[in-house]
Image 1 (cartoon, rainbow, N blue to C red):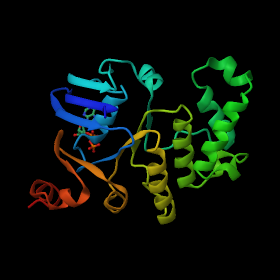
Image 2: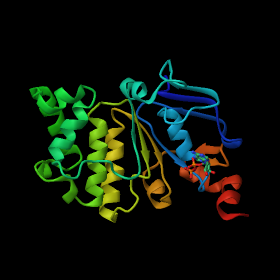
Image 3: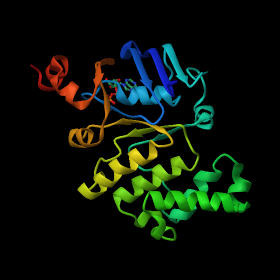
Length: 244
Ligand code: ADP
C-alpha cells in the first residue's frame, strides 16, 4: 500500500534554531497517527510544514506521489489535505448549516457564496456529515450557541465537507468533557474509513484509549514509533517524559 503522506528528512530552522531535524514520517490510508512529545518537540511545526504554513529548509513532503514541499497552502488544501487548528474558527453568528455551506463553497468566490444554491448532492453531503458529527438537530442553531465540543465537531465537519484524503488535527479534545472526548475518539476512527488522520495530542489518556500507531517527537526529531504499549516500555521515552 502506498503511503498517503511521506516526510523525508524534513528540517525547519527558525533564525538558526532547529525546530525540526531530519524528520521522517509515513502515514498510510485509513491510519490514525498520533504525534506526541513534550512541549517544543516540533509537533505543531511538523503539521505546519505538511499543510504548507511553514516551509521546510530541507527534505521533502510527498502527498501520494505529489511533491508538496514548496506548494502554497491553498493548493495543498485543493489536493486534499485539511488542517483543523486548536481553537475553532467557525462563524458564531451564522447557523451550523450556514457554516457547513460556507465551507463547501469556500473555493468558489464571493458571488457563489452569496447567491449560488446548493445542488441536491451537496445538500445530502452536508446532511450526512451533520449526522456523523451529531449536529443534524442543531442545523438551524447559531454556531455560537454550541458547546465547546460541538464547535470542535462542527469545524471537523467543515474540513470533511471538502472530502480530504488527509486530516491534520491539533489537540482536538482539549477542554472537552469526558463524553465529548469519547465521541471525538469514535468520530476520528469513523473518519479514518475514508481519510488518514494525523493528530497532535497531549492528553495521554485519550492517546492510550484511541491510538494504534504513535510517533514520539523530542527536540525536533522522531524519538520512536509504535503502539502505545511499545512506547511506554521504550527507555528513551521514559527518559524524556520522566527525566530519568
Ligand atoms: P510542539 O508543538 O511540539 O510543542 P512546536 O512545533 O510548536 O512544538 O515548536 C518547536 C520549537 O520551535 C519550539 O521551541 C518553538 O518555540 C519553536 N518555534 C515554533 N514556531 C516558531 C517561530 N515561528 N519562530 C521561532 N521559533 C518557533
